[in-house]
Length: 108
Length: 272
Image (cartoon, rainbow over all chains, first blue to last red):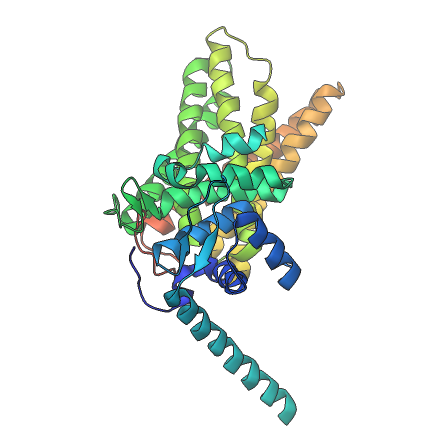
């Protein structure tokens, strides 16, 4: 598995779905369907099947998540240390950006 | 689930070896909306253009079979050649009506197939920079060109003496969807300033005239309206479609000469 750094934005249009998946997995191991339910409940966003698995493949390729063995056809996924680190970096950047925006609003 | 299974089969073999079982289990668990089906089709296209899984497993990079630039230039060539062939085919059938119709239909089919192929490169170059409207337009145009390809194939079969009942309908719907989709793409391109004005305006005006003229003509024909009215609507759709094809050619020539929106993804290769 090849890791390529910590920048989620390198995933292009899959950046947002990938972040949603990482946040969902931060709450525990989940298979695809459980992830989409969790994400929809958390953010109101319903990921399409192609988008979900496009993002999962990219995350797995970068070593940010790993699949677990299962007797079921539904395979669960787990957040890795590298994935947690990439997620933290992205959330901090978003937090800083949100703060900057709110500070500007407060000035007006 | 039949349609979902069919769409999953469009994914690359290596991708399916890794994800098919769990993907089907996932799809069985929830009802797919039309948007989900479109998302599945786009996912298959993405998995072919930017494979994340190879025969040797997830994450091992495959050597790109073609650079992004080469792929786009190939598509540009297909767009230019395809639009010229379809232009010739329509012009031919107008000028020499009834003469060598099989050759005209075959030239038209070749043109439509090339235009369909070129849509991959046009989407790769412009989909991201033209936003939701542009992406929806490109998807509608792609579906339209697929339908038009089947309709054109039926037309060739018809000239060979094997009439396929569905082909006129497929051809009509395909042409209208292609014109409407590319007109939407042109609007998005003009708004985002990523398309050259002449090409975008030709696509927009030609696309609208082509779609409206063809729809009106079909309506007039099936309602047995006067020959003059049918002729007038035919003139509108033919003029519109020919202008549209000039616009399509210009989009291709723009791509060929390297006029593409800046700031594309870091994923530079078609297979990377």
